[in-house]
Image 1 (cartoon, rainbow, N blue to C red):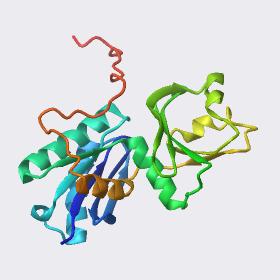
Image 2 (tube, rainbow, N blue to C red; image 1 turned 90 degrees about the vertical axis):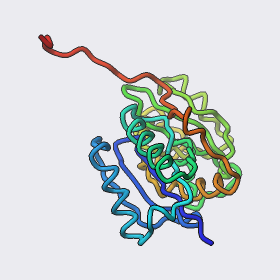
Image 3 (cartoon, helix red, strand yellow; image 1 turned 180 degrees about the horizontal axis):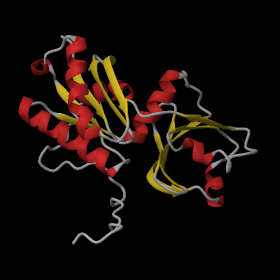
Length: 231
């Protein structure tokens, strides 16, 4: 019997949905802007319809849990939790940076032991959310915010080839100039990068507590004062 998992990615400006069937992506639907509250449910319905999959046959919901956009993560989380409650199926949450690394490793077939993958998500100004992974997805540096200043160069040892990916990768271009072991490959978050990871989590029953789950916002939302008085 096949395992069907609805995968949701909403942590950046890309709103992305697909169905994982035994770890493989089908029915990928994506829309790039920050209107996730308007697009997410229609994308889910379109993905299910195109894949000819009844929502009642889903085994689990998988969510990209952050870090990333506060609003995007809230929309994705509330939608995923609502569907899991309604369908009475478990929720899986995957670190967004791990999913980004998984996507790059899979897409360009990285398998060398001397390679490190550093996924990056734009966190405004000169800051990114980042982590380090081996090509077997062992976490070498936990998820954290990092400012791309001269201290960042401490992470660029010459004993490994370093692949930097994600929507924050371009920010590292100038500071990595002259480091021939560093490859900058800007990529976008996608629900299809969750598929193999969600299948592994499902097989190991790594499910979230629906009552207490919260995305990994990492930082509070940016709240600004209105330009004009409200009254």
